[in-house]
Length: 469
Image 1 (cartoon, helix red, strand yellow):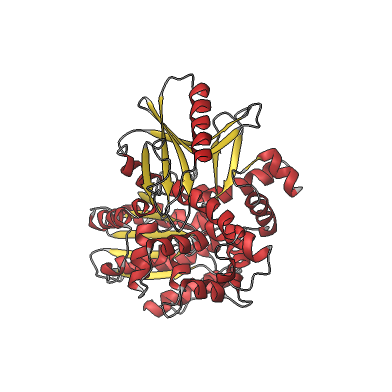
Image 2: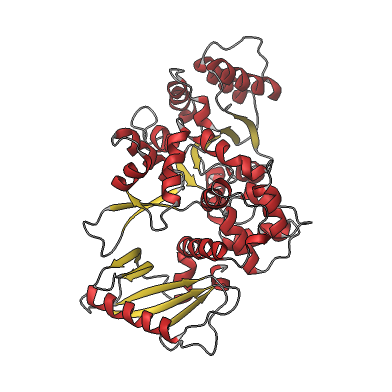
């Protein structure tokens, strides 16, 4: 039922338009593992899905073909012939679809990259199926999904062979934002404050599969203990499975994210090579591109950084938590770390990331949604060692927002010394930009500002509640 789908309004509209069109449609849905691609399609097309199958992780060619063929037989295909190759399989799919009388026929091929085993001829057979048969019809909606986003991009979306320009629509399905995470947890029976929902998000991100593992009969701390910190917790074991299911040579990918987890602002390519001992070249380029396409890292250039190098930053909440508290520490319980320096160091770093991935909500609160912006790290060196700001919003109007982010349970107090620090940053950024734009200090905080604090220096306030809009 469509009312079971939380959020995904734009994606549902794409699917609705495809189903209601008067031509055959070829839709690719990308997104990281466990983000809900299959759920979206199955729930949206609950009554219209006439065939579905999924690739087998690490399956052989014979296993992939047998599984696909068995699904066809289960759906009612009348054939006692065993397919020899993928051309035979797609011909059988064609015969099955021709036997149906439904007006629109929706087909889901899930985990498509796993079907494409080496030298299997899978892509060629898919191309032939689409080009020789489907394009001559007006009743097919072919939907393909894959967690290996790099494969989906290279083999389908950016295909230069027989599938070039054949996709009619593509969808990239991101994790939930805070708003949809809260709705999801409420539907599960949780009654959490926005602070607790944010803490949950900072631990595991907005991945629906992870959120669905939470037990509403337990507190958030108990859930974290059980799922992530206990020896056999489902999300403790997920880490290696996650990377192994997406990438060949997963060990090298893990080495890269491990290095990035140690540096909050990220690393340059040369710094990654130094930290991981991996060789420079095409192999590392592929690793970085694949990690970015699967939403584990982002790339950016920082303002004021010498040489303007490309910087790679870890942005996956679950990976960061795993590296910091599971791989490196023998942590017995989450409640034991609450209020400690370790907790607030982690919370400060992840709240900065939480703010970054909710930049649209921040811009809405500031009233600048319609203004084109770029978000950058700013670093400035001086005789006192310099300063760094992890979020500066450079706007196309004559204004810059210098953002400070604080994650505290109580309203944050701006002391005299902190106010002086902010004034120094303001002056240094004004000089760095040749005083061509006005600068507004914007405070993004979990609990607002203390009324007694020295807050006249602050031009704009954004609270955690604003990030839930």
